[in-house]
Length: 304
Ligand code: GLU
Image (cartoon, rainbow, N blue to C red; front, side, top):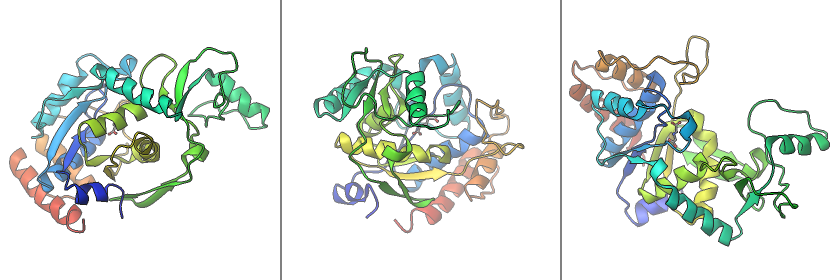
């Protein structure tokens, strides 16, 4: 049975989807694909669609970006069913989740800096990695060794491979312990890590279906592990194709992707729809969305 199926069938949980942008800049052609797919999937299931502003990483947030994103979504006909929630105001929820993990010995404080982690791997004969996320070697799993706590990590050692069924990518699996090791829940700078915040919020908001960009697919097993550790329901996942620039790289705010051109919302929707295999032909935003929703329903809701 697909993860989340028990929840969806057994408790007949009403479909609830979300788009969860980080306000680090305006929407671009790539983020519109994820927004549109999550909206179409919710509407095709006659479900609710929420927007959550993922502004936990405050230093990366850009003033005015949230208002711009909501305006861009509205121009493309996508208005959330409830007022957006802001992660920056939900620290108490994340702290409660961390406290419960600590009480169950599933999370622990870590005193390692990045250099400590690099040194630990170098001491075992591994080449130094200058960029990217380093797998945590588990140094503080059995105590801080007299150092001050910097971050908090999830204990991943006891688990085998996490398997799940992505609605577009098919069967997936990852051994989190081998891939990332005990990952960070609360960062050394005191900010909440994306993994914890997203899992707590998806559950608190009753999200049954997560539809988001494929660049986040490899985060899913960490999130499933956390859902299990916190005894939370597992949503169903669909990861959408990434839009690539002329250089083949994924479009992102980091590589200066152009903000959406709002003078032509139908053209922007048409381009996003093409990435999703939806080819609606209509002159206005509402007509385009209605037509696209019909196609999406045929494509993505029949076999479920
Ligand atoms: N905030 C994340 C981003 O903008 C998306 C998180 C998610 O959809 O789970 O990339």
